[in-house]
Image 1 (cartoon, rainbow, N blue to C red):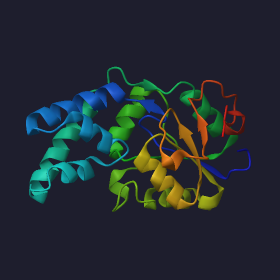
Image 2: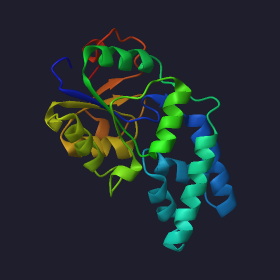
Image 3: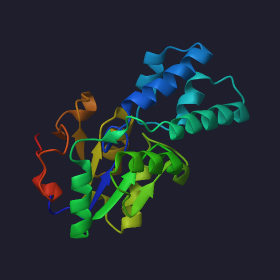
Image 4: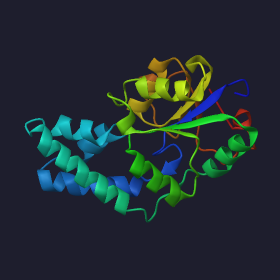
Length: 213
């Protein structure tokens, strides 16, 4: 991957391990609204909170949905205990910054939440963040990745995207970028894609990360 012009990273599950917090906040939400946490969490992973609320509570007015999303955001921002880096993420981003490589985080979280989690995990904040409020349509729409590439001045075809969730993978593939799966997620979308478990084996530079087809 040493010939890439830019590196685009999803955040939750890709750079930051926030699984316990996300599961707790959404489970409490489901209990309040009589929803199945397993179904909601399966849908929510990689998507904007507003899209998940609208999907499971479509009868609510827009203002009521917005109020619920604001409450979810406040709960998630306030809970940073237990949030850690995906192994090797901090070292990898620092190495890319030292090289002067173009790096962006492309997340379905709000900017406020993204900064809270990145700082809690000690991962560092790259030069570009594309957050939920920066795009009209969230993942699986590819516009977030296209916007990140544009902000870095890189053709999307020369960008590498690191993703861990179905919605994010769909967005990344549709954008035309080279896609690397981070973690264990398997679906029809992941067939033939490169994969890494984490970045723990990486030496300075993405091209040296342990990548397998």
